[in-house]
Amino acid sequence: MRAIILSGRSDIVIQVKRSARSKRLSLRVSSLDGRITLTAPPKVPERQLQAFIAERESWLRQNLDKLPAPSAIALGNSLPILGVEHQIASGASHRVSHGGGVVQVPFDKPKPAARLQGYLKALARDHLVEESDKFAARLGMEYARLSLRDTRSRWGSCTQDKALMYSWRLVLAPFDVLSYVAAHEVAHLKFMDHSAQFWDQVGDLYGEYEAPRAWLKAQGASLHRFQFVD
Image 1 (tube, rainbow, N blue to C red):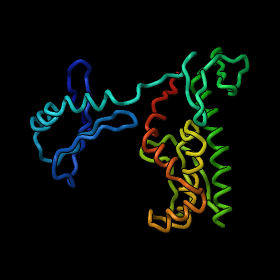
Image 2: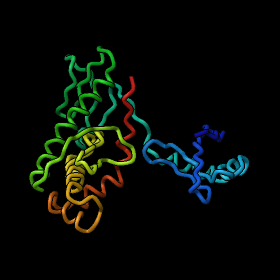
Image 3: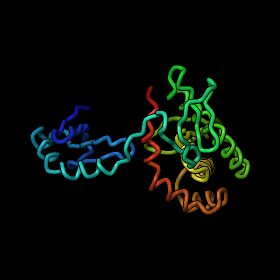
Image 4: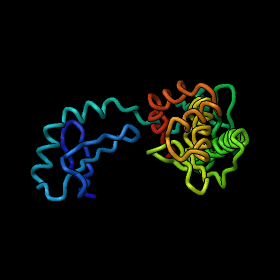
């Protein structure tokens, strides 16, 4: 995949994807990381691609301006843990801990951002295992294994061999959102589709799921603004 750079008040990088299944040119701005992809049929000439992008510069910049600003892991910044904002502070211990609206990170030790990320992943695993076990027992079925990833296209998945996968960033969302995603994926142990039966099953497991589902659609992309880079 090659890239086209659109110069201006700030350069915009557009990844070009050639696809035999594409019948026309289309631009997509990812709401998660701002990545821009231009999908094009194989034989469209380069000058046409560039003209297409130039015509849509205003639209591209407007969409990029709407994206949440990236947030670094630094003293004084904040991030949500189970939906509650926590200010990042320097802790005396070599371990990360949180409570009372503060998350203490050992900034005097190597890789504090990585340490915080590891802490959040462990916390996410604890809650997702607990919720998945609860809903699986309620369903009367078992899952094979549970894994965490930093996925950008989905918050969770369930495979045919009953393996559950979740985005660890769910630990940043309110707890009811994390719990809803667990119920959603556990329901796939029984229904590997999104039929009416599936949604009835989600409701039986979780209860009224419209609010957390709507939160994910409206606010989910903001969970990717936190950058755990040392």
